Length: 155
Image (cartoon, rainbow, N blue to C red; front, side, top):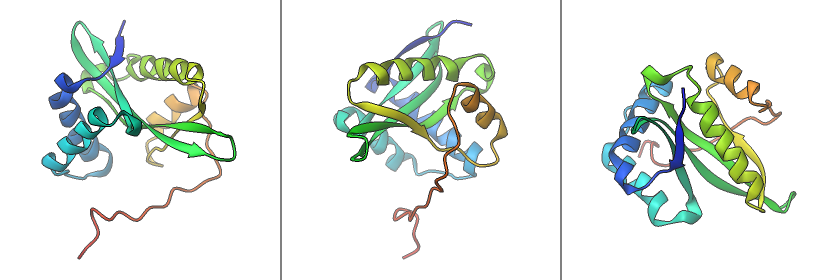
């Protein structure tokens, strides 16, 4: 199956928001606030220094998405590109959507002149995703991901 990979734009807002709503529910059982999510997606378009979305299209239909955000590394004098908000529509799963998106990201990252590597995080029990990521050459690191979520903290 062939996919056209392109940068998302504001015309894709409704799809990106819906995909992120689906992603949160499927991967973590979370129901996101749609207004906050919409503002967060729009932020990526209004401030490109935050990152960008790529989408994969098949016959004019968006089949999948991913978002890139940036992390500066003083140790490497470069920027890591973090892959986030990966979602592939159910009917397009296991058909090469993520591989097409990742291949484009790797090409863009290598050609950027500033990117020193690509990172992503994945739910530890998501075996299917782990196999896909490892097949593309991504390796498990020795780091744990820790967080304190101020948006979901009890008052």
